[in-house]
Amino acid sequence: MAYCVQTEAARVLAERLLNGTAIDVPDSFKEAAKRVRFIGDSAPFIPTPLRITESSSALNAYVAAIASAISKDRYGIDYQDITVNTDVASLFLMSIILPTVGAKRTPALQHPTVTKELAKGDLYQTQKPIHQQCTNVYQTKDGRWFHLHGSMNAGHTMKMVGVAEQDVTHEEAQRIYMDKVAQWDSEEIDRVANEEYKQAGVICNTPDEFFASEHGQTMAKEPLYTLKPRSAPRKAWPEAKDPSRPLAGIKVIDFSRVIAAPVVSKILAVLGAEVLKVTWEGLPDIAATWVELSTGKRDTNLNLKSEEGRKKFAELVKAADVLVDGYRPGVLGRLGFDADSLREINPSLIYARENCYGWKGPLSHRSGWQQISDCLVGISWMQGKFLGLDEPVVPLLPNSDYQMGLVGAAAVSHALLLRTQQGTTFDIDVSLTQYNIWYYRLGEQTPEVKQALREQHGDLHLRHYDEMNSLIAKTFASLKKAKPGLFQRPEDFDTMRGEEWGLDEDIHILTTPFKLGRSELKYDVPSGRRGRSEARWLTEEEGR
Image (cartoon, rainbow, N blue to C red):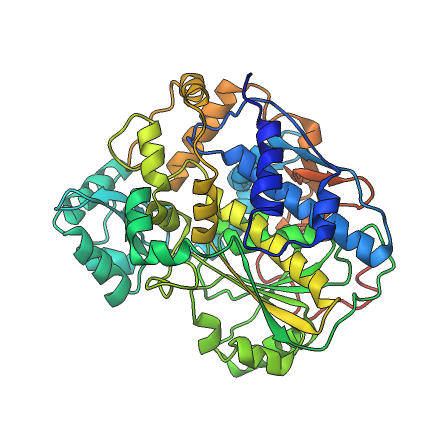
């Protein structure tokens, strides 16, 4: 029998999310999930050895089932028909490069008006070759592979390995870093980067090496997400006049950057939550993510290192339902807002924190990124082997970022429902590594499917030194060739106003992979420039 993505996605949803998990999944989620239908191409088309489309499709279905269960509990709406488009669930993983402007569909990240605004967030010239290639996989003196990472200011890591500021090509920069990293033993560069310079970086493990490690053994016991109850007054759903929005009236603070945690709040926004992103103009960011990931959110400029900024933030927390924290472990606590302090301000607050390594184990304090977790758990080695290489290759898309965003949105929605039913609120722990472990355990594609994918993408040539920008661009080009028309389906894209970017044209972004029979999925706020909003919640009149 031919392999079928939709059949496998349904199996993952049933066996790996609704049942057979350490998460106590309510019966209402299981009932709602009975109405899920998967549609799309029956064959996988992303060239990777693991079940990437099936994972994304199942998690999108899980989020949709929770939203359906919430609507039934909140509004008395019967469980809704749910459709998950597995093709869109695949494109979801590359959403950041898909926004286009106007009738000509100019890529938003190449539009001069947009790029001028994005440049304001790139405080340390991350696209300069000597900076960009600081974030890449290089071989060490003892023959292992290490993912060096420059984060949003490559200067610290450059100093560590002894690379001077200079104008060179990308290829020249790669050779410079290859030479420098080759002078280090893997354990030493890992220790110095993380413990002395406090910079992300990790040895590229095979899956066997990861699960044999102390950290791997600890994190292997953790569920996909963790809900830790805290005693709090039972809190009913806010009064809502629009029963078509599952999370109408829910207020969410997005305290995060880059991809994973912002995806959490973006999904909550499409379900109807009011999302306010708290950022500060003095902090660098990966600005290329803004067009897509600021959709559905207002965005306020607060310096939490100032007394006034902390006071404003506390005011926001007092009226919030959810705080999504995506900064490195301990940052918010050092600013005076740890889990206990937050509950002194707002006893009913749901506090969701996201990190790279997970929240237990000897490496939990480290900062990290998607690529770091992918290399830690062994996903990168699997990708390299799939491509016929004896070296790790970071997975081709920001997969664990986007899929962990789905996990986080599911966890928050789960907690919101429980908060209305019992005298508790929740601390939520999610991480890239928790997702990657779950993803790995879904198993590899069959040999036949893997061979078909390699043949379909025969012109895709990658190496260990292809960093994320290169990986996304090459994968995008290969997909356009392998599946003509994949990115031109009008029904797969939504339209929003471009005025918040200074445009007099609309912006087109990828639609949500799941649809509900009665609930309306839409973004009440278009994406736009950083810091454009006041640090306050909308009034009832404004929110209509």
